[in-house]
Image 1 (spheres, helix red, strand yellow):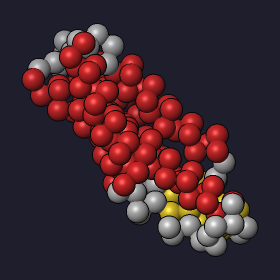
Image 2: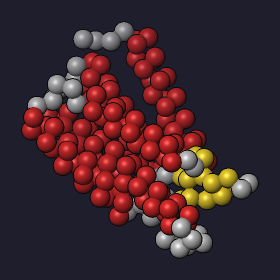
Image 3: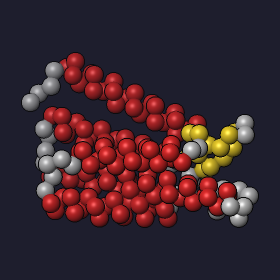
Length: 160
């Protein structure tokens, strides 16, 4: 199916708006709350799960393994995640690279689903999308760990 030009422009406008929103929010940081910290990763997991509707059992197995790998990577390599105070309010900032890559591969997957562009290369964005979603979950767990450590009085800063 060949899309009409206005459909492409509308889709591009949505994708650019999502990029702008995520990058601005990522650069400035988000107010810390436990619900806010985990709402985003849960939403990302739901969006990725929806993108796998109609996948084969082996693709679902690969996605599960990839997400576990991503969680591990997110916990281990989330050193650039920041938790900070601004005007007495606690904020956190996730990795802009992970946010940008996730949005890119989700956009690719969305275009593939909307326009029926399935091929061998459909698997590559799917794998990367599940790994990146796992990394976002891992980053959230790392931020929560830093927050709990700070709350228990074991550390006076968020650098560990």
